[in-house]
Image 1 (cartoon, helix red, strand yellow):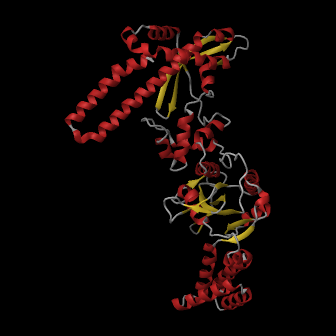
Image 2 (cartoon, one colour; image 1 turned 180 degrees about the vertical axis):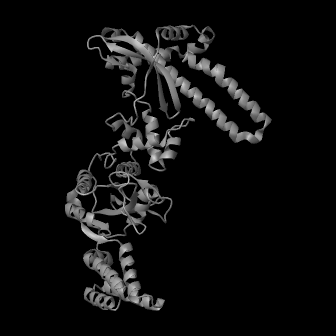
Image 3 (tube, helix red, strand yellow; image 1 turned 30 degrees about the horizontal axis):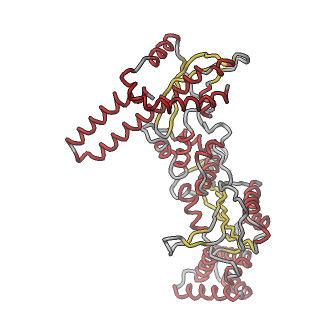
Length: 494
């Protein structure tokens, strides 16, 4: 502590005085002065933390408990990136007297894996930034200091992070709901490559590098948006999603089902309404959840307009509007037979291409007829769907709204991280959960000190700082308390 105060006295205060003089001379440079003051305090904060770490390292060296099993081997310089900036300090490597194992005991107390170069807080900030912006911007926002992290480092971090399917803590008691709503849709992204670089094929300007990212969310209906009375929000919404290709699709729906069974009194749920566009991968979810399908309004209107436009075949606007009104009326009254007859007649009068498109549109309406009828009749508990908006905000805003290419690993990992973030997950907790300690880093080369350097370091840190003793007397009791508390941490690793 005293070395940190000395540092601030000898470096920080003169620098602040210099900034003050510059401000007095040029008051219009206010914002620049604020930025410079901020940097001074960041540097001071890093120096304080460095001092604490070296003090803790000294306590480990002086520990009698440590001496029983571990002996000093050498000392090395450690550099680690934190949310405040880069911190460089000296730590001791110890060797176990019985096994010959070497370890940095301070790292073990701090919970750092070997070769950790980025602290949990900086890694958490990096993931939170990557969930919202590009890897490059995330690297620039990893810490508040001037240090930047390369986009490759951010990418490796994202790829190595495994986010849980949903981050909500289990309720103390199961919730009750008469109706539960499961909504699903997909975002379409572009892959840089499918399995290896260069395997994307192109034909007439189109590439076969499309990939869907699936989104599912569960909620209890709409609630009042608080102060903004015009806006409604989903009640107790939880998101799920990712690539879930092929057989993994069942894994996605298993996660959703387990969440519902864990969080709700399923005996009290009258119905689970499954609101979507009726995509093929969603049918497994309806089956596993025992849900009743409801086609969303957006797709009903989309295919009605498409059929009316095709039937008009470039005709006047009045003809298209009349056809659209007629189709709306038949669907509203549940007159499927007339709709089918109209589709056959209209399709016959078109060319091969137009007729095929109209037939496909009618087939979509026919295959989802039951879901359309539930939507039109507004059965008890049925309410509006918001899948398109949620796809935009939860996935597309980061993954497809701008031209960008993904690897499958990157798209899957980032979609899980973004969904975890949208669910209100704690990024620092996510970093702590990682199997590799959340390093995601290449191993750093440690620098060890020679005997002369060690003696020099000892001499430097053993010097008396007489002129600072009076200022430190008030903090002696807290320092003693801190040392006593840290001894229990030493005991836990020795």
